[in-house]
Length: 85
Image (cartoon, rainbow, N blue to C red; front, side, top):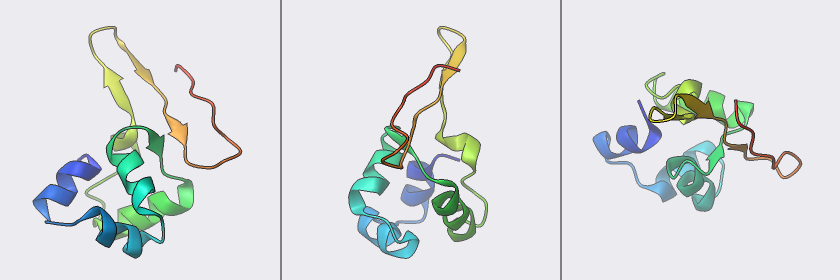
């Protein structure tokens, strides 16, 4: 399940989830907008918070029209490359 879907289903605001996960509201917006992938540490907190409803694979955007996936940026300042997988 996508993070946005889980948040809508559970009536959770960006601000509330950001506080719970210990990240910024902008980070939540980036995760929801497919602009960044959470770090391993944050992903573990997302798994715990969502009772495993949102998994790491849910942060990868699948482009079915061209038959491949694109890896998104990891939300760490030192790793800002976007790679095609």
